[in-house]
Image (cartoon, rainbow, N blue to C red; front, side, top):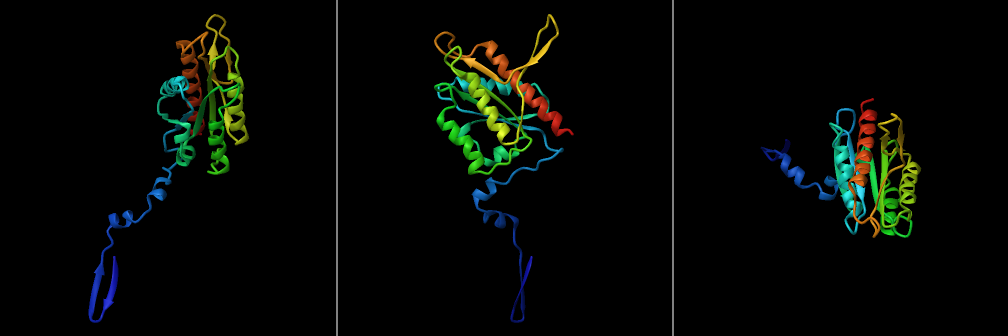
Length: 214
């Protein structure tokens, strides 16, 4: 409420909330991040680059694994559609990439580099994981996973991979990430490869939930 004096008259102006909200630029409103902290549910971002659909299929497997952990929210996006708000509000980030000539595709590399150089996102202590796809039996898929993890470590993140268990011996081991061979010798994404993606999603979600509860 605001009071104006005009001669002998007093004029009362009531500023309505919707009028004030309408004056806020959309670009600024879109960058407002939801509150974070122990009271907010853990949030995971799955960001991937896919042209043929194979890496996208693995991303869906990762998301299924995340949903195995109660209370953890998953946001899934093509890497080029990820916003600064997506990155800042995520407690964990899982990156997926195809393998081009034994390496990360140039377009994806430019995007994730810009998260640091242009967006100035603070990745400190977010939990990270990675997965890849590629046509060959070797072909560089593990190199792509390692490169994505090194990007995360260089940006002060905590990284982890899927866990496996030998039911006969009881031994448990971890791997750097998940991958799928999608070339002529083994086209598409198999159920076994989707299982590795699910394990990755479940592991990162469990870690995020545990760390956020502290």
